[in-house]
Every structure is written in C-alpha cells, then in structure tokens.
Image 1 (cartoon, rainbow, N blue to C red):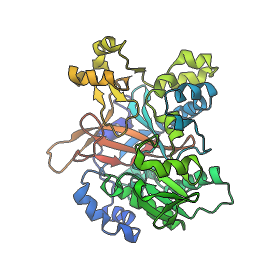
Image 2: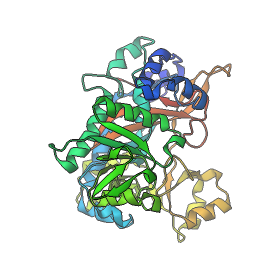
Image 3: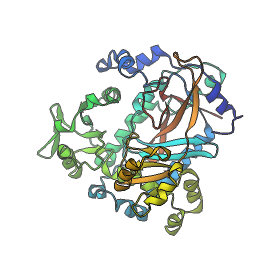
Image 4: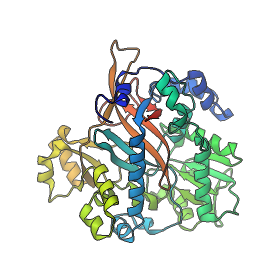
Length: 430
C-alpha cells in the first residue's frame, strides 16, 4: 500500500461497490451434480466465506511479491540452506520424490514500504473457492472495468485459472512419473473431510479433475490401504493424492498407508513433507532473513536485499531468551513452528504469563509485528463503513504466482467469522 493519497489506497477506503454477481457465483459453484445447491448451502453454513467487495492492489506490489518469491526459491535451491532447515525437520523430509509441491501460498501484509512476507504455507486453502469468486466478478466502475481482465485470479491472455490449477497437478504427476504415464484417479485426502470448514473447496477440486477426464474421490486417509504395491481406495487404485492433511510429517498411525505409499512411490503425494520442511516451517523465515548467513553462503547482494526488505525479523523462542523476548513482546507476534490457519498464534501485547510459559515450553518463533493494511466495507447491519483488516495470499507453484486472493477479517487472525469478511477478489491497478 502506498501513501494515503494514492488512488489505490483511496479505492480500498472509499469504494463500496459490490462486484460479486450472485447468479454468476452460483453458476460457478454448481457446475457439477455433486455441488448442486452448494450456493444456498454455503449461505447458511458459511455466511462469511466470501466478501462482497474486492481489494485493490498496485501492480508494483504484485511485481515485488513475485520478486520475493523468486528470491526465496534461489535460497531454497542452495545445499547449505537445505541442510540447515532439514536439521530441524522430521526425517521423512529428507526423502525427495522429485516433485515441487502443489499449491503453496506466500501470505503478505501490505505496508507503505512494500509487501511484507508473514508466512509460507504448503497446503494452502482457498484457491478453488477464490477462483470461483474471481470468475463471478462484474465491473462496477471505470477503474474496475479497466483492470478486471488483467487482475490475478480472473481469465486473461494466459490460460484460465482452473486450467492452470489442473496443469499444476499434472506437472506434479509428470515430475515423478514421466510424460508417458497416464493419470487416472486422484484422491483428495483430509481428516474427516466432510467436517472440514473448506470441504466445499474439495468438491470444486474434484469437479475440476473430473472435467479433465480424471476420476476423483474425497476421503479420509483411513479409507486408503496399500495392496501389492498399489495405494487403493474402495473406488480403485489411487495414482495421485492431493494432500490436505495438517500432519505435515505423516506421523500419525492413521496415516500409515499414505506414508508408505509416499515413501515407496506407490502414489504421487502432493504437497509432501519435504516441501513443508523446505518452505513452511516458521523457523525457516529466521534463516531466510539472516543476511549475514546468506552472505556466507554466497547469496548475491540483490537477493539478500529483497529478502531483508520483505521478511520481518523472525527469531526462535528459547528458554535462554525468554525474559528478553517477554520484555519486547508488544512489538512481536508469536507462532508455532508447524502452525497453520492462525491456530495457537498470539499477539505479544495480549499475552498472559500463563500463555507465555506455554510458548516458551513449546516450539515457537517470534516475528516482528507488521500490522495489516485495511479495507473499508459497508455491511447491512451497520449504519457506517466498517474497517476490515486484510492479508494478501499469493497461490504459488514452482516459484510462479498462479493467482491472488485477499482475506478480510477482524480480530487477531483470519477467521471467516466477520460479517462483510471472507475471501475477496483482488484487482491490480497501475
């Protein structure tokens, strides 16, 4: 975000146009018989899943975020970096299946000095839902009309986003199996998937796979078994697993079949434990932001500068440093090293001594607090505009931004419980 007089910032504070076409969104959500009535169901069960208002972002910020992603990729390729971060990862992360890991996300807060990388995730949710939302947009005024065809997440001169998402999974398959192998069936796997908040997204992903001639099932990992060198489900052999589990090391006994299939190559599993270890462990940000160490590894000055400018200072929480960090807590945000979805995260100024003792005893990092930018929205129950916090999510594959989405919220972290909040389409403007 630029200065307060910047037109993009003005749009985020003063534009209250609703760009979501409800009829178009319903069509996008109900393309498959399995998702019939999904639009009406979500209105009752997920009333704050989609925001009605878009987010405006400068194209310079999009370029900066892509540059940061490329800088991270350059460091991740270094043997020294891999040894450093794999040292604290589970042993399974040392197995390299040759895949990149599907659908990572780089999450940013926008600031006057440019985008700041808050975290990286490797089983990021929301891409399929955001794609449906983006395709249901309508232009409401000249700035939107001017930008809508070139905004991340909506059709452009490139392939439509759903096709890019499918090509990503096909690329993962070919990386491990080669170009001649036929991909027949994909399993979308999560613990009790029907009970997951983003289960509707699994339905959309399954529809996408089926629309490209691939059979798709949604299942709990307990529904999988290894038989004679094949990962099987009741519907048949599973070629590829779209892994949505938050057991990033596949350590739980209930995931034994999936773990075996992954390690022995009976199925392609993506995203996989190695990708999480290389990118999403929160301790990795302390390494990526360590300019002195990167210099020792021979990282070029330009890459070091990009990382230093965009990654908030991140430190490991240790018993030895507990009192020092407590004294500085108001300027810090604390996250578990293998956290996801904002769970068990704490803003330092709200900490109690009891919670602090749990943080020190657990595996946590302390990150310099970067306040999120904001978006003003109007909601039916309030007479005046309401200020929402926002973060920007870049969905990434193999170092390339596939699409952008924003999440609007109030409170400490994104929660999909705020009226007027939820996933929002991003319009990028000059």
